[in-house]
Image (cartoon, rainbow, N blue to C red; front, top):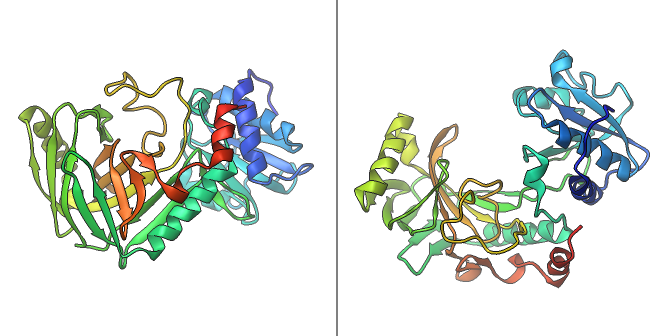
Length: 337
């Protein structure tokens, strides 16, 4: 392990997540880096492995040939967990990772991105309950007080989740993440999406400053109405993609990741629109167009209401029922690490 400056708070947060991932004491833990990895994040990950009783081994991909399974990952023994901090070389990751190892892929680019993250088992429980709701449902409805009224049939839809938990051998998890999502079958979406002031245009990271109404018919974006100051930029972005698939409704995601802030963000809070984890934040609802790898636009609604077969999942930007944090998770956030 290389010596380096560490962020003590990040060490504690990383160590707690490693415990939730059931990292085995006395076993090898690999910190996988490349030239773009924040050295403080890498050092903090290594110290977190020490804190949970693992033996850290840091491997820089820039210093290793990419020559098949394991590369240099098994040089210090059979790894129990790999903390993936790669910013590049992602195509090679699957061939490098031993099939038995669990992988915690840290999507934060620096230790600063981990501020406000409080690892807790309650998140994975809420994500699992949300997935159960999506799997059992026939229709998802997104609405709000400003006119959003979008209905998506769930028959034949693809569904996914991210909870940041790599607890079983062979598991790969992105962390910090907390989201459930669905991609409707082709053509099964109808209605309107209204971007209200303070909602966020992604991937640009812009606040909506005036209401914009988008019409969806047969699963495609067919109309964008609002002030030219807003709509011209959105139309130009979609046109720049150069593919008709940019207009296809691709996904609806519900954020469930609780990130603490000293106070609630203001309507146009500087820096919040493009802050880390914006799509995963608790209660945010993202409606995206495109058809991977084509990227269209994504509308991040901050005060939407979502129901699955009339069962409320989110109300006015707040998760409901079994998707809401319980008293134990709330207590963890009142007394963070």
